[in-house]
Amino acid sequence: MGRVEDLREKLKELDADGMLVTKIENVSYMTGFSGSSAFAYISYDTRSLLTDGRYKDQAAGNAPAGTCEYTPLTSSKRLAGF
Image 1 (cartoon, helix red, strand yellow):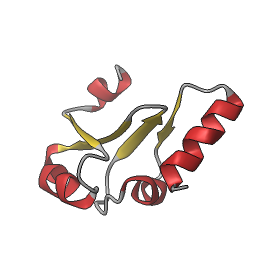
Image 2 (cartoon, helix red, strand yellow):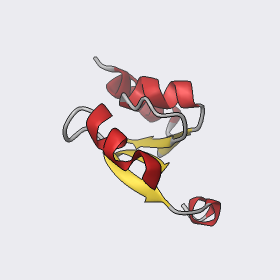
Image 3 (spheres, one colour):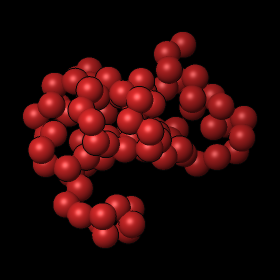
Image 4 (cartoon, helix red, strand yellow):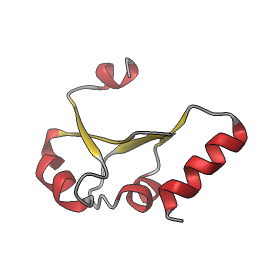
């Protein structure tokens, strides 16, 4: 199994809906993103990379095709509503 699949199995064991990954080293490990500012949200059926517009092209290029949805962040207020 891969990293994301392993995490999804653990989420099931813990009866958790998903996990917000905030430490950039772990974001990189789970998504392949190599920028310096991002979050990732991983659930049973979603893997989202949340970062600001500076990293749009990089986010699209780092994650293997179709494995991670890029979600732009425009402010910390938007993240709080996430």
